[in-house]
Amino acid sequence: MAILNTEVFVDLVKREFKILPKNYQAHKERRLQAYNYADKTLKYIQQDFQSVNTLFDENKISEKDLVLSFTELALELTSFLYAVGADHGIWKKWSALSGIGLFLQEKIYESIEYLILGEEWNFIDRLSKSFSSLHIIQNSTLYEGVISTLALSQDCMDFHASGEDVEEKAWLSLIDSIPSQKYDLTRDCLVEIAEFWMMEDEDNWMQFHPRSYPDFETPVCAVAALACHQGFPPKGFTTEQYQFLEPGLVSARLETWFPQYFELPLAR
Image 1: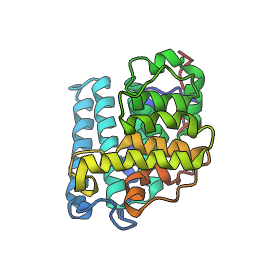
Image 2: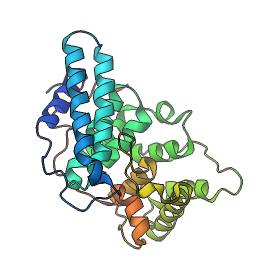
Image 3: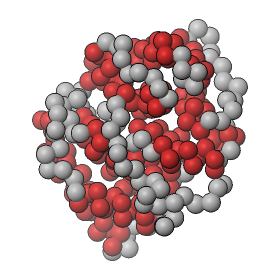
């Protein structure tokens, strides 16, 4: 079994590029105008993929730059495939690949969020046994700390909400409500956070943004996915609230990358 490294990641990305579905819009578009830009967006992504391959083959970029570029393309594909209406299992596969690429770059917080949305639960479970809570949580933002605490089953650091910020308080409440399976409180918190960001973004959150990604709020959706993974029933939301949280409320992956395709390095 191979240990996760640049070569393993690059091989997985190349393999998945070869089998990108031609009929990527299996369902109604999830972000407005996504289908209008779909063909052009996918063409640009494929061109970038070929360009990066060529540059690496000609020794014009390093392995580090190759991982960075492939991760960015994976992140864009995750968002694009979700927005345009691809099956959930397809964009989630690219979310998991994004998380792997971010992990290789030691961008741990971002990696965890995309691994969660990609339903790489075995990977996350291994991380919980390999990293100390201090390594993960120190110097984190509030939402990064909350997600890391919940995902890795670590002891919570001393987080505090500032003033009367209801969104911050909702994040903090999730630290207890999700593992305690207080479903009504969890739903109230997710609604509070979703409504906050929908109001911040106005109507823009429902729009597709060509070559700008992600077209969903990754942290909010990731914590919703954590809740669902621990038994939270994804119901009781308005249509808009559900659309906003959907990447975290749906489950679709049957096969995961870890440990079927690679093992992780020794614990750090």
